[in-house]
Image 1 (cartoon, rainbow, N blue to C red):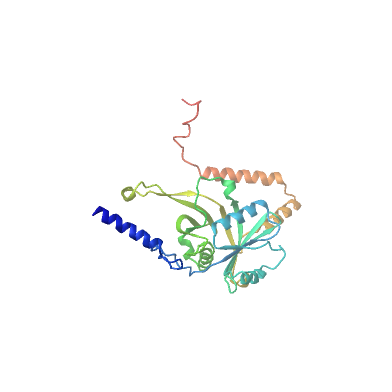
Image 2: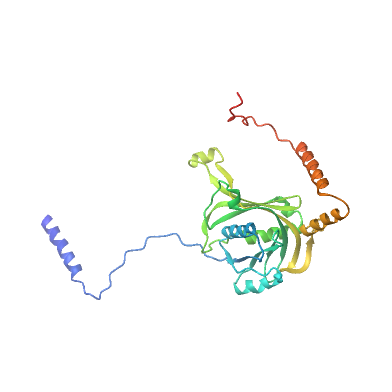
Length: 307
C-alpha cells in the first residue's frame, strides 16, 4: 500500500511538471480581510497663515496641521490682502472648510474659521498660546488618528455659541474613512467656555485596565494632556464666508490695539509705568488672597532640611 501511495505521488508530481507552458495555474484563495470604511464625508480644510507670523505662531500652525490629517496646506497670504480671497483658494483645492491664522504686528494673532463659499464664519482673538514643544507634556498619541470632540454644555445656550460649535466640530473633526487617517480614537479635544472665551485643550486617552474584568471593576480610562493650549476670544460671527451680515459682535472685548492706545493715552495724561506696575501688583495680591490653595501634605517629602 505504501508503494502504491508513493507511485501515486510521483504520478501527480509528474503530471504537474508536464503541464503545458501556457496553462494558467489556480491562485490560492485570498484570505478574508476587513473591508475598508467608505470615505463618504469628504471634508477638507485649508490651513494657512499670513505673512509676518512669529516663531510661536508658526509652531502653533504646525501643531494644528498635525491634529488635522484632512487638512490641505498653501503658501502664506499677504497680511494686507482681503481674507475673502481664500474662498477662491478653497475652491481650487476642493476644500469646504478653512482655518486662517492672521498675524498682526508680529505680536497679535487672530483665528478665522469659515465654511466657504457660503458661510458662516467667525473671527477670534487667540490668547495664551502654548505649543507642544514648549509645554513638553507626557501625553502622546498616534499621528493621523481621529479625535473625540468634547463640548461644554454652554455651547447650546445661545445661538452664536451653537454656530461656533458647528464651526469647531467641522474643522477639527476628522472624517471617517479618510485615506490619511487611522480608524480608531486615542485622543480627544476639549472645548470649554469660561469668561466668554473658548478654552481649547488636547488630551491623550489612556486605557489603564489590565483586562476586561479589571475594566468592569473600575474605570481604567484616564486623560493625559498632549498640547497645544490656546484660548479663543470671539470677536464677530458672520453669516457669509469671511464677511457678510454680522450675527454676533462682542463689543466689550478689548483688542490689543485698543489696549496699547489706552496705555499711550495714560502716559500722556500724566500716568507713569511705576503706578501701573504697583496697581498690577496690588491686584495680584488680592487675587492670590482670594484664591488660596489648600496645603499639600506631601510638599515636604523630598526636603532634607525637614525632619
